[in-house]
Image (cartoon, rainbow, N blue to C red; front, top):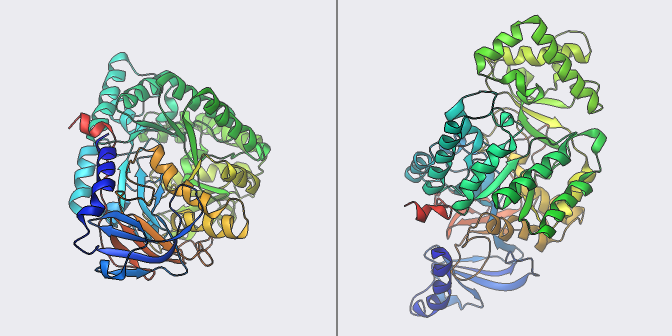
Amino acid sequence: MYSRLYVLLFSIFLPGLLLAQPYDLVIRNGRVVDGTGNPWVYADIAIQNGRIARVGTIPAADAKQSIDAKGLIVAPGFIDVHAHVEGSLEAQPGAPNFIHDGVTTVITGNCGGSSSNLKMYFDTLRLMKTSINVGALIGHNSVRMKVMKMAFREPTAREQIDMEALVEQAMKDGAVGISTGLIYTPGTYARTPEVVNLAKTAARYGGVYASHIRNEGQNVKDAVTEAIQISREANIPVEISHFKVASKPLWGKSTETVELVEAARREGLDVTVDQYPYTASSTSLESILPSWALADGDSAVMIRFHDPAIRTKIRNEMLETLRKNLRKNYEYAVVASYKPDTTFNGKSISAINQKLGRKNNAETEAELVMELMEKASLKRIQMVYHTMSETDVENILRYPNTMIASDAGVAKFGSGMPHPRAYGTNARVLGHYVRERHIIPLEEAIRRMTSLPAQRFRLADRGLLRPGYAADVVLFDEKTVADRATYDQPHAYTTGISYVLVNGTPVVENGKHNGQRPGQLLMGPGYIVGK
């Protein structure tokens, strides 16, 4: 409420207050796409004290510094609603892969994984300073792990209360909502009522429920329905993360999953989705295994792997999943980062199996999956999974309530074979899907990257180019903006983005990151309540 009042007062009184002094910076001669979805207009943008002071025609004498945006699009900085920057941002506070792709704000703590102590996490970022703005969700998996470890059961009444208390504290500490990763352990062990009660706690503090739903393949419609049910019962806005159809037999069914979301909205439920514009996903190798096999901690997992009968059961369930998805082997599963043997990076499980001179069949490959996990001491092995169809990607992109998100962390340039979405998500939309494929118009794409995410996560002074709003701004050439990262050569920054400003400070100038760290922490609406 206070931030909205500030924006209103700022927009009314600031122009008069600044008449006697020049603006800090004026962006001139650009085609302004303001984030609303409206057509572009020629306008200048004046910035003062990190905020937009004026949009219109501004005399040259009124600026200390100017940027000539002739031939460029001037848009609000992009807001990535689904990121995982814990740890990687501390290592690289300049966040170059995000900044070069026009991203000025990220929402982290997704898929149920976050810092379990957000106050400490925020304090760390505040001290070190970052190039991007950061908002964070509290992760259900992290909360459950802290209270219940890897227990494969329902919580006791006491444990449920303890988890709700952790969520409440996180909301007071500034979380923008709660996330789940119901496809991952230990979140997959949670039944819907557990999640509903935690979501109710977040809802009391104005939070959002963001979910990596329970299944994105054969049972994707049931999983979408569960997310909608949580919205209904907890009375909370829902963001369904990286919306997709990841099962070959269901390719083309995205029209049906989108309709589930739209039907919920007609019912009056505030449900939206986000998407990365690629036909491959990226997550850990362990996601191939049945979730029960990963319960109760690493020691228990190793015991199961070493028990011949249980190992056979795990392998058989893996093979059954392959059959259900009409796949003969693990050719679709490509290693992104494997520390015990980096020569495996960029190769599929099938290719690694052949490289090792083993029998060329799915049974042997399933065994290899478990062996790779054992050799990595069950530490996370990042993968890229080619499981989606281009038809579904485009169907979901056409849906007006779809936001754009990378599902990435801060990439270490040259390390491993990460998913190219870490470098080129927004540019891929603007270059491939807007300019080349004409799937959606430019102004609509920018709305999905700016004002819609700001509205979803209640960032009251972000996502639009309006007086009083934070001066997060990106300047790019709509004719040349492009993603350069590919699956084979993923370490490549976006091209065609000339300037990126974060809170009024240029961070990218003439296409180069200058090292500035003007990012801010963006606290959720419960932060003032619990201050």
